Length: 151
Image (cartoon, rainbow, N blue to C red; front, side, top):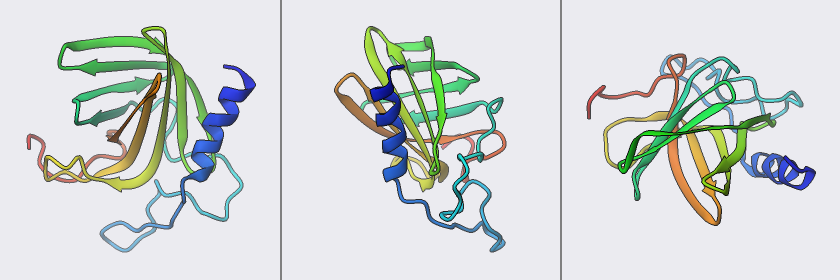
């Protein structure tokens, strides 16, 4: 990744406002970064499998380590690419190349609705492939979604 791409990915994360959330018991939500911290975001472990999905058009996949698998209804098995992970103060970004186009994904700890189910996810996702930008939600086993298993 070039310095400009790394700077752009880091800048995108820094632009996202970090706020202090709480869980159902009123305790601080461990996925939400402390806005006063200068440490990189550590709410999603590097060995944690992060799943993501979006609508209009439908897309999804997962990140496991440095492997990102991107799926669509036309390609349900997905395409797996190698990505670089960057931990900023307000979340994570992943960058790589998919079908000869730059892929940049930011993951921000913020409650997210997919607009189609009764689920609430712990992370928002912004995915840019080439010039196209998509928005979606993400979750992991450690940070599951709320709502029905099969909406």
